[in-house]
Amino acid sequence: MKQVTKVVFLLNITKVGDNACKYASILVVVDIPEGITIIGDSSFFDCSSLKHITFPKSLTSIGNNTFRFCSSLEEVDLLHTNVLELGYGAFMSCISLREMKVPDSLQNFGTNVFNDCSKLVPSDIDDCNNGAVVAYLRSIQ
Image 1: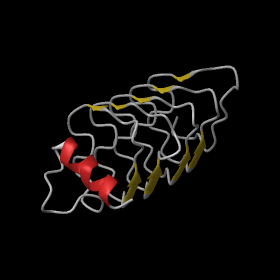
Image 2: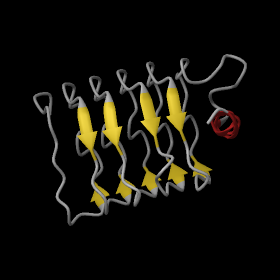
Image 3: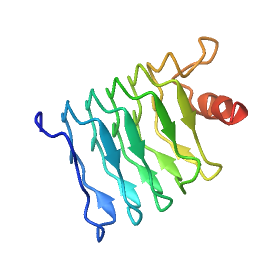
Image 4: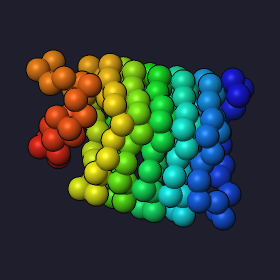
């Protein structure tokens, strides 16, 4: 996976599989096509060069540790999706993440979703308290 620079998803799938692009350290851009409803656990774990992701409206779930350690990721826009849940540590340690747009459909999230995202979460908000973080994110949209 360390040599993967581009990923193309087939149009007839509904899930990005667990660990699909894990450790693809030179992957920069991901375009997830319409029809995908789930991005599985650790799918883009430690894709340290990942800067841009396009999400489909059909998306309803982002799994555990999916974008953990994506240290180049600066912005995430889920506003136009139907995301209901973010798994444990979904964006943990995305140290460059400074903007996150979340839809009203978001209802469930595991622990530590935004842990160690200091550019996203102000110091007066506990980054382990996902309810407080999501409330803050919604207030600035």
